[in-house]
Length: 383
Image (cartoon, rainbow, N blue to C red):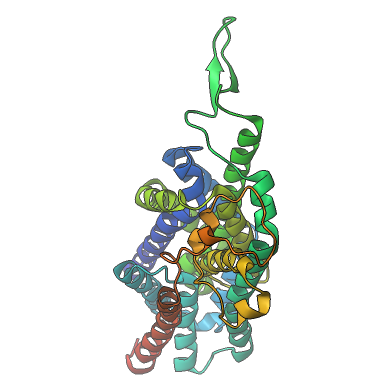
């Protein structure tokens, strides 16, 4: 029979996965739902399937790291596992309270590190590698998208911009007695290809989210042997799916509506770069934040797009116009020469250093608080 403590641990794991599904579905499928390519129900189903695929494949590496390499498996007693998962759930609460997308991966690692320090079993080498990637990944995301925004995006926008017409993409033709799909009258083939790409990349984003986040829900329970890795992945994926079908409806509305001011092309670039970085880190077994990478991609793309109006050296030194992600929304079908002033790229009502600084502050604060609280719990409370 299951012990009461194990039942509590499983319930906390489900709670964590539930919230991950609610938030990650909006990030992955916001552009697709916002442009009316797929319904919320379809988005939830695709999110569940591809999160399971990501967790079942490369996600195993992250579970292995968090469940037995940061601290030995022997330290994951059942009550310690419940404590670690509690701090992950607490991070979600802090994130929702302050409206900042805190990283559950970073917070979970912080809680495990606190346990390791309290028991003197922390693997310093593994922890240093993880922290190093936490620093490198956002910087890499920013600069990859900054280069794209400054040198490549204007040409992509002029040539491959994806516009969404009103009405359905396809319709059923019933003449001849047998219904068959065809393009709607207002749909161009270019638009259809673009919308297929939107859905495909959203599925890739869901795969990346499953690969990175399944460990956040179940790694401690897998580490102590309470459940095996396959059961853990299925449990986490099911919980993510429940969140996708329920609370994700609100996040899909929010993200979808917010991203309507951001061209679909820009959203796709952000999703491809951020998902690729997280999938690569998951393959290496490094728990990292999809939200952090995606946000830095948006900032980098906006910065690169707006600083086309100045020389690169001046932009790096902070000389030039205020940088705004709204610069991405400018209609620029005609590419202007580098350094030529573009007044429509100077909007400064979305990205500003103060807001970005506040978000980064909370990204550092939440795992730090998690590590400290975990240390105090396991060092001074007899469990």
